[in-house]
Length: 100
Image 1 (cartoon, helix red, strand yellow):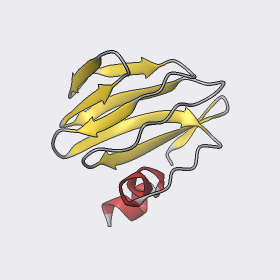
Image 2 (cartoon, rainbow, N blue to C red):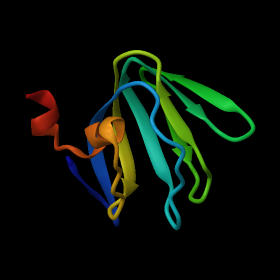
Image 3 (cartoon, rainbow, N blue to C red):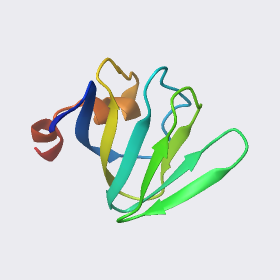
Image 4 (tube, rainbow, N blue to C red):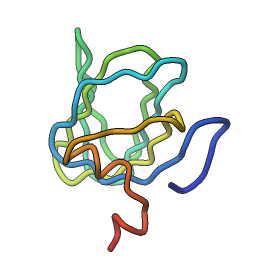
């Protein structure tokens, strides 16, 4: 975690491969691409993001981030978010742990 924006956490995360379909209730989720590329799949379309791009996913919208290569993002999401699973665990570790 880098900081807090209102009641959301700002994280630096290394995304790897396909994550899992999920939605956040009550708050939006923001992805800002620092390195690499990321496809965010929605139920009816997909958006591809490259370094320097950002995308806000409105609350309640199911989405599935897929890292197309080594992808680092600044991620703003609800503070109570807890992800599980091998790939998702990478998103919840601290920046210090991820860089070690």
